Length: 139
Length: 139
View 1 (tube, each protein chain N blue to C red):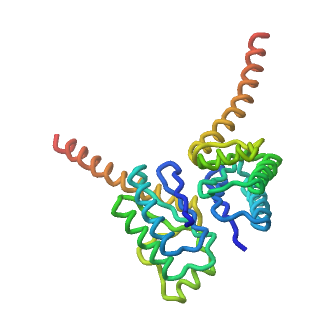
View 2: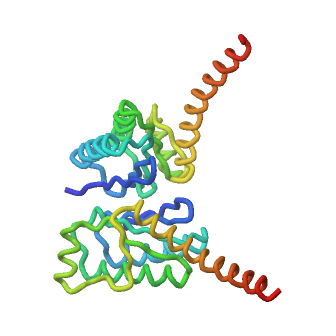
View 3: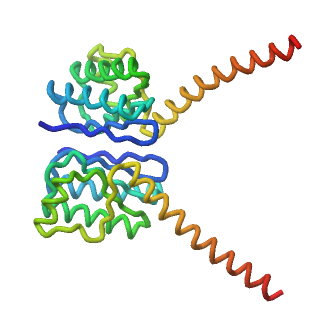
């Protein structure tokens, strides 16, 4: 059975799907990815599908499942590298990949994930700042 | 024909080989990679072979050719993710991948490339410092 490798790059796990997704491959990938997220504590998953000519409903569902599994393990998923023809076919098939974020390439996907994390941290900081200000105002 | 995607991450091009290398695929990859190096000006190429169970002499030659092409285009190549069994078989076959640098995983490969670049830049800096010092000493 072929296996899709999961590559760790900093705080991100990168998966490049190049082979045809079959039931077993998809299940194995979900398992491998979940294991790696827990093992590494990574907060982002990038799935590159630039090698895929076709994304059918099975692949769409697999991507959605991966995104859901990652989310409950505190990691965000971004699908990158979708070809224009794939996007057109997807929408024509009525599949709009709900709950999956996309970016044009790996770098933009990384930037998206970094922004989200920054944003989250900033939110917490802002709250703390607000609290500090409230203390100052009260004193 | 299947095509191996070339992913740009910062100053590095990442290639994850998951499919069986045939003549056409190998040629196409060499061409794609050379095009991307020129197009992006990247100085590093990382080839992940963690999905490969076997590296035969053809794949070995392909990797060596990619490394040579990259070198003349001012990019260094590191092969990462080799499985222990693959390493053993390679040596038993008398293939030691001359001229190809390796690292255990993508992150270590990136670190290796970064160190080399730093080293090169530092060399130039050092020379400049020496020149400065020489001027100071002369004045």
